Image (cartoon, rainbow, N blue to C red):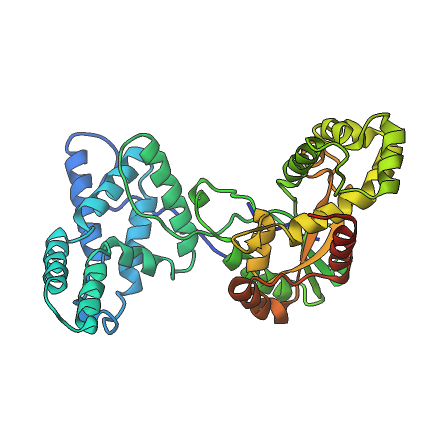
Length: 407
């Protein structure tokens, strides 16, 4: 079994190898000392001059060949040889300042766009001028990062570089670009029998590295992880998440509060459920449940757990399937997996009995099932038509909610 699904913990996700920190160049000392600072600055300028590819002319942007891998690798090696945060910050600062946007080109292209807007011209002419302006706004250093990402271990290097950059920003040393990222490896278990593994469970996607903060990785990671796992475990046939349901308790408490304001109104529970819960608690359902569900106390009573299972299961199904924001699933985790083409597969009662699970989602968790041949059409249907693919279990619970509720 594996764990994955939004922040990511997974085992051997990608065979990336971070380039080893190279030995100090002969005759070039990167440590402090008389004249060392000047020598280091000259070395930085030289490696940047060779490594950062020039921006091709607009007309040749699609035809210009990529720089030699060695040039990008030189930057990776040089950067890896800088042990101090301040040195790395200095290099990134020089990269940002000396190889960023050509402001002269930006001013020229901006003036061209403004001039065209003041004159009656064909729309295509203005659109091309705007495209030229967008191209001028691309910093030159983006080309370096783009080509580094294609090197073996390059994406992992960019993760570390971004982490260094965030640290440098915290120290107010430099400011720089955003980069793509990938996840940290986790060592394999020594007791696994590969031939018996038939199902991979994606538990959580955790931002395990500082360099991943603020980067959207989910779509890329899940698909890539599935491919990697299939290579290692050919017998795998089922891929599913085991996901939390953040916001469910808050949503439910809001409903209970709104109904408590209208005496006698009941749109969440059947009459028999209300009677049973009232007998167990001794108070009206809505007032009692608001207090109980705000903590974990209710889970200590086996009778309450049994009595709440049916209503909370169907309420949760509706929350995941029927509650929307701009036509898409209100729950962020559901929206994440549905965008990736998953099926809203199974709601699990008391799957997370921790304090966090009980107070956040009444102990419920949900499986999002990935059928590899269906992920693309499912994703398209969700994103374009806002259609949620769900299992019979979920649809049955939704139907029960619609029968017992009037929301």
